[in-house]
Length: 71
Image (cartoon, rainbow, N blue to C red):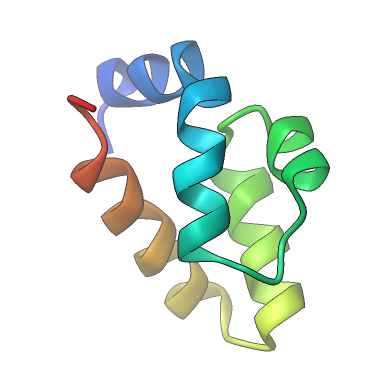
């Protein structure tokens, strides 16, 4: 993932947190905001909460970031 995409996501994370809550309904808004749109923090949250492998969680996070790069 490019540094530019990471910066875009972090810069508008508060707006995207609501969409992330729809995507991962077992995460709270507070957890999502605290993750700050950081790929690694969000991947860890998804991995732990949903009991999936790191690779699966990272794939979901990257897919979410790509879908929301221009939202």
